[in-house]
Image (tube, rainbow, N blue to C red; front, side, top):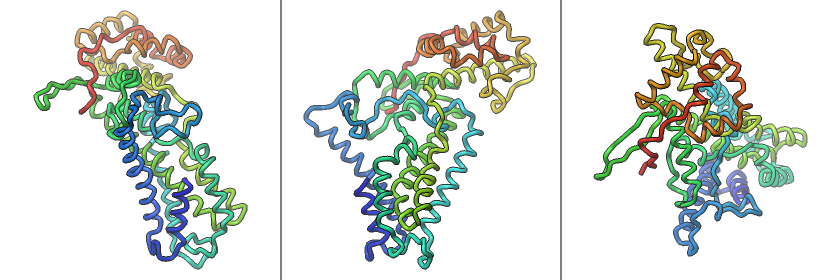
Length: 387
């Protein structure tokens, strides 16, 4: 970080380096360092290392969390609102809009061409070098706590069922664990897909188009905020505060970094907890759709289950244990058992009943009890990662 900050300082204030579009060139430099050079050297290290590191834990220095070669262990919790897929899109989009607008105002201020003002970041005579040094030290040692957790590609790999082309290949048990949870995500509104490629038959479960594109949108939001915007703030805030007075320096150094933490969750949420709620939502939608064929009023996807307590209140009269059991038997006959919990998710519900206590007291309690007691059949088509 120190080297990048020095380069950005030279771009802004060293005559002859970059005569115009200083912010754009600064961000281009950050991209080259953080993406192009980083992943190029990571792949070279993985390819030419004599003692191959085949397990992820071998890439992690147990005494220094920062010395991890860019390889992260599996992420089992959602830390921000974009990763928590049990939260409705309508609650996420407004927050994303606010964060993007705040970042755009910040970038506009950095690109202000008014050189004559006393707080212009384009005039080297306005720079207070002590401010810049303090801000750089702060960004190196304390910024991670202030700007929140960075974007996790590992999390979205297991959600979307894709693998990063940049990471080395691993043969440890964590890859099997990720495939298991990827299968669970694919079960949410999923379909069985079979295709032929290069003379081979490939089969895997895929989420429905509606669900998958919604998750892809959440991935893009998370990347825009917790990767792109986060790096913009960390590497340019020393330039912004270097021209300010003492009080404004203190306020802006911490306030600007707060932008990327607006989406953080107060408490992290387990991936398994998210999966259970997603699958129960699809389960309820299917129950509602089947009832519609017999005439009752249907709940729309937007009205359905994130707010569990009022969910399906008008279904309660017909959701008896007997007809729910009969309906679930029909699901198994129709090979729709993917709507039900896998063994690992069912065990998680049994071990963490407090997390789902609100469902026991809701209008959909009968459906919930039947849902949590059932288990899906063994998958006929195991997960096959895309080539």
